[in-house]
Length: 252
Length: 241
Ligand SMILES: Nc1ncnc2c1ncn2[C@@H]1O[C@H](COP(=O)(O)OP(=O)(O)OP(=O)(O)O)[C@@H](O)[C@H]1O
Ligand SMILES: [Mg+2]
Image (cartoon, rainbow over all chains, first blue to last red; front, side):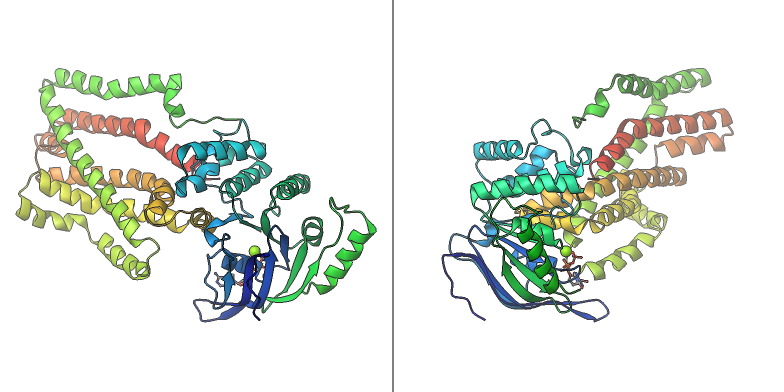
């Protein structure tokens, strides 16, 4: 399948295959014939059960895994070096302070010193991390750690933000709070977000469209739009109805 | 909320007091005993100094070599071929090298230092390597996606990851190093603390022998207390999220 390259899109994936070959020669079709495009400024979610290839797909988009087949294309101005990522395990550098963690991407990109300082302070403030600049990750709660993870990801002003189950390691209250904060940031800054999740409610609450994946091999089951008004009421009839119809597409 | 600072552990008052006591204890001990036993204080310091010099120059060289090897080996395709080779090399007894080294360099410092490197390199190298190999995949992914590539990755990711292993390996390596140098000095490398102990034993001066052993212990305890334990604690703290 070919999708015409268009300014409307931030990323276009066509015919992606990925086969893992284990040491004993066993092959796993982690991703099989996956094609989709994500619009600029869209909140796009990849939903599926454990082991269906969501993380593999996200890493292919990030350029961290070379697909066995297929391609990922970005229109001009949306080059892959402006991709950022938030991890389920936070993946903060334990030897760096909160400040240095947030600053990491800016230092690596050799952004001018005064911009580094401004952007780091800005994102620390934005994520409510003031006063924790000199703390080390081990001294923070899970929610605070993920705030650092998000601040680090946003500090480099990404065109595309990839998030791999960013709220899965948090308790329900912390996760709900962080989802709200994330949504208001996304609404304000119109950045393209691709999030991986295995929670139907999370997908409906946050995304414009949901791509549902089926395991073994990891294929696209369907891509569904979420046409509910924001902010979304998780207890509304429409919400439940959509959750039901999505659940019917999710195969274990 | 702890606002840990890198030197905090050295700032606590009790630590200063302990440090002070612990530095002066071995010196006072050596001074007092040599006066009591009627030996020249300076010869003991020369012996200790000679051993110290050998161990530390060999240690510095071993760390340098280990880091170079870590950076060369880590993540390369030949890693799986290289590690067994290093493992064979490491099991080769360093004492077997001593005669050859003594023939090449004479029974002096150079032979002793090369011999010590052959002893200390391995624990340092292998624990640095293992702390990198245990690395969490997600940390490396984060480093790479935020732009750490090539030399930048080595400096801002690989080295900090290797640090806890380096400290652990240093403690083990230095322990083995002291054992080896005392052995070598007993066999014939002079001057040195091993030499001093051997002379005392041969002459039947058991009091002096005991004193020498206690002085060495005190000295090593000082080093551990002052340098390695704080470093170990710190590297452990900051290698855990
Ligand atoms: N490095 C690897 N080597 C071999 N197989 C792998 C590797 N990584 C993933 N797989 C396999 O590929 C399939 C997809 O894995 P992936 O991690 O992408 O799934 P996922 O949807 O993210 O699962 P989860 O919800 O558990 O995170 C799984 O069957 C997994 O076992
Ligand atoms: Mg996953």
